[in-house]
Length: 221
Image (cartoon, rainbow, N blue to C red; front, side, top):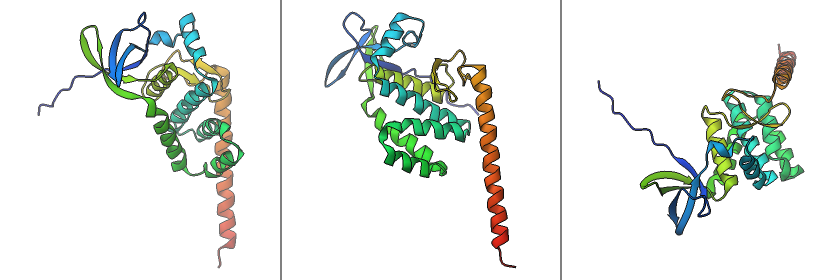
């Protein structure tokens, strides 16, 4: 049976640009000059990328990287890393909120629901538009500023299989992946986190065994 074939559509990440750097234009309430966010904006060895990263507020950097960490941890079923990233994401919300988060971490749906809620609120400023570039029309995701553009790029890379900025789940250091499957900034952190995960599993197993013993003792004969 013949299957229908569909062309792949590339959606560019767009942000407002000066006339000097503009690659095209779009329209939202008014005409907006834009440029595409590219890999050059991520190359931490280049001065332009370093300057772009410095434009982003520290709290936004932390938010972006911790959301990516939560996504990756949930995909790999790494409960320890997911909890660590979620607590880091909520670290500025106050002691009362952190207490509620810690009390809810045993519920797997809570982690996913929190992630979805946070992402939806963060993506409110991103708009799907049609932009004109080099005499043709193409779809694009219009971001309000470079911080939002970084957020969208890192999010899409985390869900997909593309190398991007990451936060090391062990030491919390920001690093640029050399490969899409690189999870840690160094071999040392990778091995240390492997030990942490083993200890977490041992602790969880021990708790379950105690609960089973306790319930068997209380069970009436």
